[in-house]
Image 1: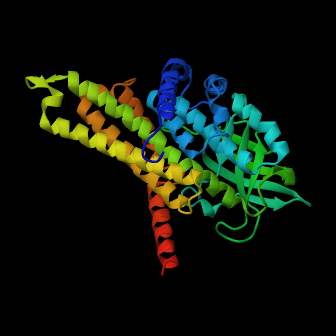
Image 2: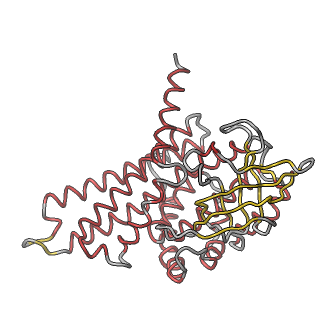
Image 3: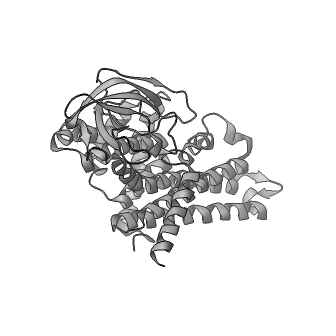
Length: 376
């Protein structure tokens, strides 16, 4: 089963992606400015056909792409993932006109997408959205409010925006809109964050939208958001696994070569056991990611639980693995430009975005109790 093993074609494809990431994507990533959209890098992802695969692949293929790219070039992985996150609602719920206008450009890397869900007062509690879509005539609204911590903002070419159109609290009464960046009243500012990819805030001052901009159905946009997150959460775990594997491989090489106490570091039992623990946790996380992705592709009923479990375990595991790898490398790993210094900065954010670890635990518990009630 693909949840537990990959066939030779999948294994070869992963190796090809790692080589492409190292040879063609990493040089472009190194030329980019931290905190800014790297359009040459995105364009190269398009030329390689990887952005188009966001819309033709299942969840497992998405995970394989993200892990393989993350292993060799985290910036390329993140650029790919953000294109997918911002444009997937258009692919899954957009009108023919919306798809025709944007998906081809996203696939070729000439248009940058963004997923605008979080707000200053609605990060982990996504149902607490306050951005308001006030009626402005039949099939017309004005968006007023703020979005915050939006990846690719304020440089994206369009945003998938979630706003409150109904009066009901919580998940009800939320609508998804496709909002081009040049709409009057829409402004943005960059935020200086630990993560090296671009993140910003958006301000909506009576931004006009119409029925032609709606993604899916009016007042049912929360389903658009959750459907997107259920697809991408396991692949966030794959991103984390790719970083963990890179840290593990660097640690194997370092401890096998490093002279210490009359031998090599690997000859110390404490070091060898630590490396074994890192490998154990990395493989366990990878298996859970593959299982969750396979469940999504099979249309299993427990995808929300599996997706939450995969993201939770993999991101927490990657944090542990990278931290311990830094410890085993010593001070050299703290030097600016060292692989582990880079991974140490990159690995922290995935435990927060697309639902913090605490939120994932809440989802898991909710799904478990719902299943228990259903089986009584």
